[in-house]
Amino acid sequence: MKRFYKTVTLAPEAGGFRVALDGRGIKTAKGQPQIVPTQALAEALAAEWDAQGEEIDPQRFFFRDLADYAIDVVAAERAQVIQGLLPYAETDTLCYRAEPDEPLHARQREVWEPLLAAAEHRWDVHFERVGGVIHRAQPPATLARMEAALGACSDFSLAAVQTLASLAASLVIALAATDPDADLNALWDAANLEEDWQADLWGKDAEALERRERRLAAFTSAARFVQLAG
Image 1 (cartoon, rainbow, N blue to C red):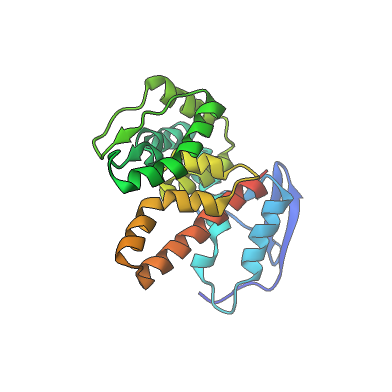
Image 2 (cartoon, one colour):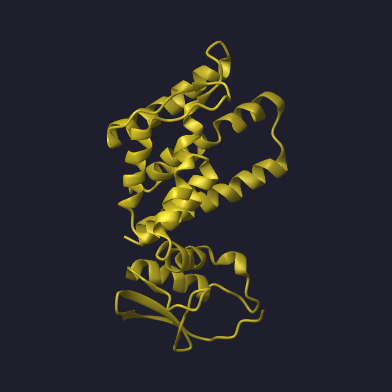
């Protein structure tokens, strides 16, 4: 699609801010006014539109798509979205370790245990650590507490957590990434520990590395979205 607008502006509206193209307010994918809660997020959305060339590239609308998801899906279906996120706590990557006699186990414990322990302290929960790949259910009290933590998130934060958790295969890492002081590169390395371990053993593949960098970019953008949305 060719670029169909010349000017990108933003203005306050009831409930937040809205970007306009040639004076016409943007709507979401489902036709709702795309009103976001902060000027900072509106400015980031405007920058995406402003950065488009003569041809519109839909893949360069990361923030727009997350905003649409927050407004069109999360706001209308909060309970379902939260229930869809809980499996990332039930099968959190950080809980599934190699067997204790395997070299990988020591590395997992070194990197993952501080993250898991911090989450347990933050939410006053206990996560079951599992040796091997056989599923072990997490305590119902833990899942109930994580459900409450998700319920305290705004619609816009939940939209970002959905992306973060799916990329990291970990609700613990996803929620940690929403902290303003989070070390996003360290969290991403933790999420990819097993993949990186195998790459160190058997060699790194250029295509896999490129895919990893694309996913890291999405991970950091989703974390930034949380901060922009306030």
